[in-house]
Length: 455
Ligand code: ARG
Image 1 (cartoon, rainbow, N blue to C red):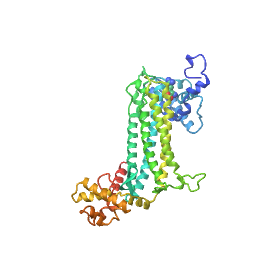
Image 2: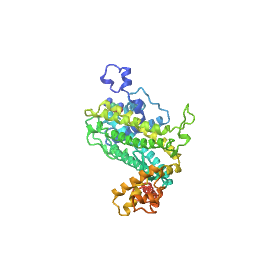
Image 3: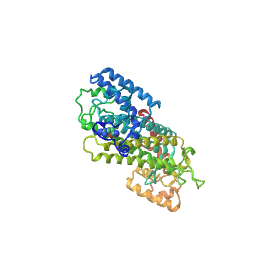
Image 4: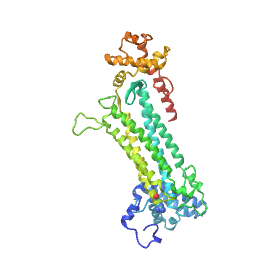
């Protein structure tokens, strides 16, 4: 029997019922639905809208139902229209008329808006913790590799020397901003819409603040139409999660490159790699590839949500039921990616020697060589040209700036002295980069302790 049975002469068509039903995906909000109903019933009792004894009967039964669902005693009925209907019908089955009073001064429209806000707030907390765990691992690795020299790239061409610790900290910074974005999104999410009713508030003397407080929410919505039809917080979460995935995807892309034979900077643990069914030599970075690929799903959810919302007239429209599958899938995907990526990173081995060898090629100390001349008083643009000629000469003679004889240096500029060889040593180049945010090991260690303080 449907909730709206009074107005209708016949039962809903079976296929239409399945199409209309959301319980297969909104049942995951059963806990929040019950918590919201308990807060609502408590307030109804306190405000004298329903009898206090009936309110407490409703509350006791809802708590009992929650325990029963958790223990598997109460099975969710997947033929019900949605989780709200199921909970209310079960309550009424258990306590009769008192159960029917729960929906006084409430609509499923403000109820579902409340439930999804409560549910996603918990998801945000969990995802933030998962990101923190990943940052922890990054910091641990960065500390161990604060002076592991590697080539830094632009255009995927070797550019200037950095350290692996420094490179890793770039991701720690991105992920810290992700946590901030989630916290910011939570501020607008953790607000109670209850009391908005179906769309036009209610005539009952509700205490909306009381409901919000008992649910640990930080305020109430200020317009009933907006209260039931706002899903900005879902859009914000989907965009924050899409950005998390951009970061994880870029990190994955680098990991995939680094464990190729062309780079061999790292090796992934066997537990986080897969083999090939035909090529015996293969060890593939499937996990990183999947994370990179799954970013597409999360961006897809964001597009779904934006598209669902963009043309809706006020206030509630059934289209909005479509928000749940999209955002739940995004939440699940990001969580799965984070909790697989983190142990993969923990067990990743770093080939320090290969990184250093790669850094020794490609003239990544050329800027430092130019800076050497600048320190002797030459304008940077002139120094740049001279070093360009030196690099061309090295390529012609199959030498590096380190192995080019001093006579050759001096033929191009008399300013060069033996001490140029010290200046262009990779360790020296890295150690001299001490400006805030630069790759010198001391800076990397300082940034690590700063991050640890805020984490
Ligand atoms: N299952 C619905 C949803 O997720 C609940 C609200 C239904 N309200 C209504 N008037 N049909 O959006």
